[in-house]
Amino acid sequence: MKLIRCCWVAAWLAVPSLLPAQVRSTLAPSVLDLTNSVALPGAIRVPITLLSANLEVADWTAAPAPSNHVGQFVFRFQQPETVGIVVTYGPAEVSYFDGANWQQVVPPSPPGRLLRHLPLPRGIRTSQVKIKVPAQPIGTNGKAWQATLAYAGLVPARLENIAATARTTASGGRDARVVVDGIVLPGSNFSAPPAGPGLPAFIQLQWPQPVVFRGCAYYRGTNDLWSRMPNVAIYLADDEPTASGGVMLWHELNGAKTLGGVFRTNQVFITRESRPTRAVRFYSTDSEEPLGIGEIAILKNLDEPAVTTRSEKPFDRVEP
Image (cartoon, rainbow, N blue to C red; front, top):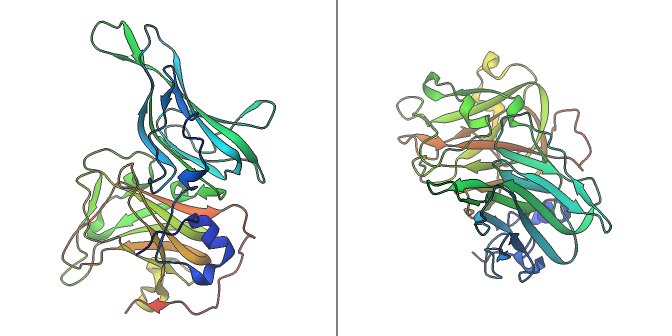
């Protein structure tokens, strides 16, 4: 299927009824000044081309230096752009240029999280985004230091990751807290087994009060396997999802999906509109295979009106 040039968030907000099956997950790479988007020291150009699927980088490395320092990774745009959030992994300080000064983006996430979704103020258009990363010693003699930006993606909509506030469960009675802890290991992270004969594996996130679900992002290590992206269902009733046990209260959502990204096979799923819910369930498309996931980010659009009551609109289809 043809990959459209508009960003996935623009598709949400502009024409949600026309969501394509495959969309971009960030700003378009064409908005970058590819020549002057560089890592310092060394003026190492950003590893993005006009053929790249998304405006995101993984393991962008600056040049070595003989002493300890802070590397700077600068994304320069051809003209001012609206940047909603900067997604980063690892120790990173994000700032944007307001036309006169650099303004630091204050991290909203709790300490210890490596995967962070950092929102910029509403309505900001900026010509540059800069990410600072502390250098690490290379070699064994301690005579050279080098900074590497593990991951960064620039997204036009202002999003909040609310996964960390959820209580997690999974099929097989497994503790699934690692899928919302902000850490994605490169190899194995978490795997949920099938729930029983003919029953798919699942991971469930649940909140004490209704939250607004608009989409989610998945991250996986090389050993976190699935054959297809999991199905996504939300719980419609106002009680505890485990209280009623009625499968008819779980409604599967249709939406758009992105191609796999450059960091931990990152993919995004977007619904046609925001949905209030007490719980979100992700389950395997094959009842005989486990569901492997490294991290799940539950995305709430900060610029949409708050949804305080459960929608009565019919869903795309109901889980049998």
